[in-house]
Image (cartoon, rainbow, N blue to C red; front, side, top):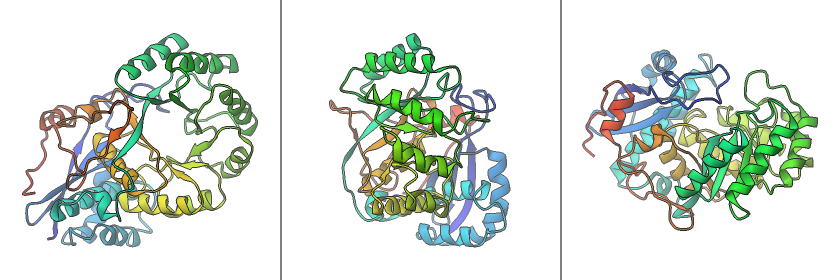
Length: 380
């Protein structure tokens, strides 16, 4: 079975408001679905955290090594793409595009073998996982309302981030966290994301350690992106001295970029994004390396239903996973799925055990967010 073609379906009209350095609007194309079609009619679906225009350019470089390649050897094909593009956008749009291709190839491999990707990666450590409802911060009253709505949807863990936090004053920061803890109660996990990958993030170690001490008073589960994304020295120091666990690395790509962060224990938990890091192949290797250094694996999932499906397969296969990120509410998740996943009474999410990514897509939802485009029918 060979790769015959690649097809792009750009998502439009529901980009989350706020939390974007350049003030992206809902109409911006920041996420693109990617189909791999084989010569035997089996198709796979991936997702890429970048625009269609950038992926089209990347595909011009990648397709000579991809078209005609085996559709049943995802890790080998992806590594071939990496190895032949060292001089062409390594780590940037090329790597982002490989992410979508890799996810789609694993989806095909799972369909053909009739196995979930997690089993093909080596086996399932768990059948369910705790999702944390991921949402942007707001003023205390609105933040309370957002969290109460999330509790009604069944979430028993939340991550709140960006918005006013770290962008006004310490009094505002604590007021938001206090209102959030009061809204969810003492038994719900609460994570905080400062959004240090925002443009011109102004804070360094001293701000971060003071903020971490404040967060510890509210039993915060982890403190994410407290510093700029390349400040590894600051993260090493912060992780050593913070009273709450420190997380980061969502903007990094390629497994090689994660090695110094893991080996130097710059974070307590590591957060690669499967739709940009190089796909399932790269992210699983990162998770394994992190496990060898007693670092928990928490996939960054501010993307799409396809990204969530891939993350669920990853956390099933990774022994060092405890949570999965779930944007809420999110049209690019709920509206792209035929049946959005349902949490159980404990706030846990069942991990799909069907072939490949294990989820069924909503053709009408995909058409609505891609300007009328539809997935290619698959023979499996």
